[in-house]
Image (tube, rainbow, N blue to C red; front, side, top):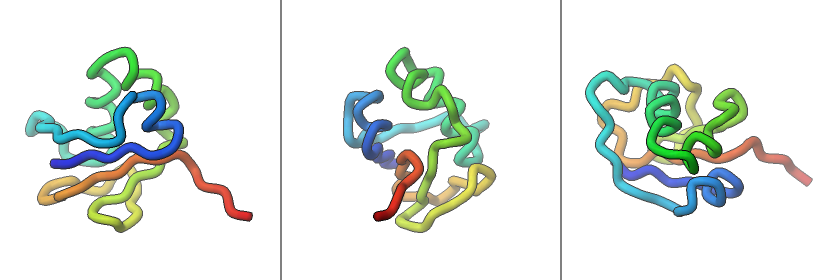
Length: 83
């Protein structure tokens, strides 16, 4: 699946997007965040406070318990502010 990173998540990971193949045990957005955070120092830094990370599956905002099976794209971004 394609994973996209935005704003400071992208800056910390060091790339805008990538294709990943997580293990079968990774079933939810929360599981994916936990797995990604173990993929190296930059990921650990980007996902060090998972509760503030927002996610979207195929352009629809989702909660951490959302299932990722069948997802084509998952995006991660920090909380947004308006103005």
